[in-house]
Amino acid sequence: MVGDTSDPGQAPRPDLSGHRSVVQEDEVRIEAWAASREHCLAEAVVAMVECFADVSGVRPTGVGRIRLAEACDEDLLAALLDEILYRLEAYGQVPVDVEADEAEGGLDVRLAVAGLADVRVTGEVPTDVGWEDLRLRPGPYGWSCEMTVDG
Image (cartoon, rainbow, N blue to C red; front, side, top):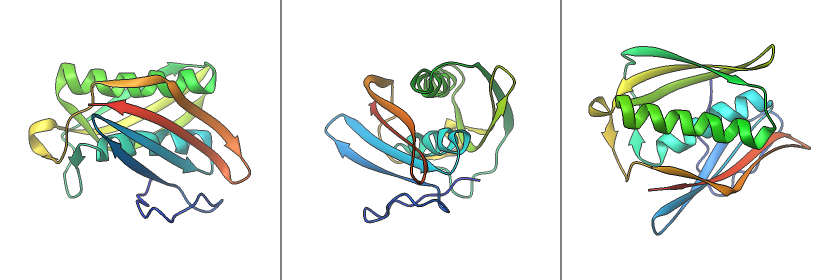
């Protein structure tokens, strides 16, 4: 579905999806890219999870679905990330796999989830997404997004 290209020299290309992050004191700056808006949104979720957890090899214990109403691109990204943070805080659910599809009037997201206790925590769990630096937009090689998450 989505892939990690944490190599800092990796640049967005039309045939790749990926992400990278930079840790800065108590926040993490994330960039993600993919061929479509929906795949870019899924890549952003994976990138955010990788900031605090290693989910490799973790089997999901449940499936969650999110239906987001159509909104401007940045609002859609913010709503998705806020929902991930809410599920993490309220239910202790960590996405281990993500699929996002365009749906009439919005976005459908499927999350394969595991409990926070079932993953190896590698960093501070994020608590908030910065709205002022959040971007999601099309470009010459597909879609890209940028965001800052606070620990």
